Length: 339
Ligand SMILES: CC(C)(COP(=O)(O)OP(=O)(O)OC[C@H]1O[C@@H](n2cnc3c(N)ncnc32)[C@H](O)[C@@H]1OP(=O)(O)O)[C@@H](O)C(=O)NCCC(=O)NCCS
Image (cartoon, rainbow, N blue to C red; front, side, top):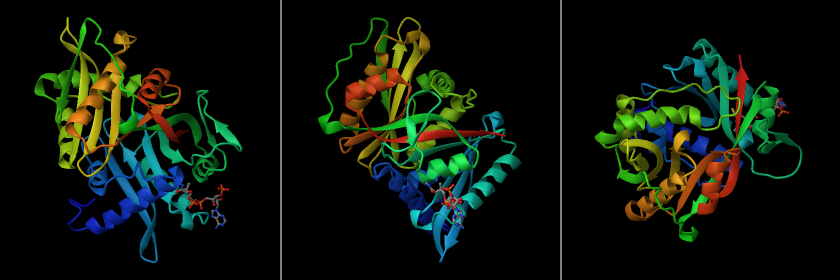
């Protein structure tokens, strides 16, 4: 990976980013999820908790396909995430199969016991469908990615709904704080007073979100990891807007919700939202989402839309989002192959 977009290797990375965005835009029929190259570069560069390996195929000098392998060296049992993208005009000639084989080899050599894929599928209804074993959601059997993954031995494990909120037409929700809780908010890096609490919440997030039969081990966070994460976000021109719920009698944070926005984009990305199990059912989820929407209006007035990803079986979170005005724009499949 290049050190920067305008240094050596920067032009090649820009081409790589455009190619990867083009494949996702083609599947979803919108470019609303296109990632800015600077943000992609920040997420693709190795960090202490995530390493990524890339392969590209060129034809006529242009990048037409790529494979990416994501490994978490501190959590080998969690396996590897793979991604293969082939530009539509270059499909059906074995490029995908060759890249998948290369990606799987990298993962197997790294000792991964399970291979996982999360990918946007074409948002068409009707026709033959493959149902999620969770009982919630399905995908079109004729989608290129669905055919490819099933024929290479991957099993569909879960459907993720991608939803979008147009802020201009969003209803204003009322969510009074329950008696023992109050909302705290911050913009940018995590205040030092909350770092340990947030690390505990992010650790819980790794296992508390519904994940069907996907292998998901607890992914521990500490203060150093929070700092690295916050620096990476800020270093790529993004700002995190965070609302957290404090349980006043204990002084501990028991939930949080985080949005990422950037000066360059009119779209904000909803990142994690979590309310610890023992504090659920008090409308804290709604309270946190309303608080982050308020932060957006104050600190990022250029943002027009928010995008979020939720497991199709995650009714409590979908209820909150639907009440806020989020509507589905597409679906991702979470696939897995145990080795
Ligand atoms: C899925 C994807 C990577 C496949 O790329 P691809 O280069 O078309 O893959 P392949 O050519 O190896 O295989 C695709 C089909 O072409 C067939 N094929 C391969 N070589 C062929 C050849 N020489 N002649 C005719 N058919 C051929 C394969 O048998 C396969 O057929 P099937 O769909 O009936 O199973 C591509 O469609 C894509 O980028 N989709 C969007 C992203 C995605 O879903 N990625 C998968 C997640 S990892």
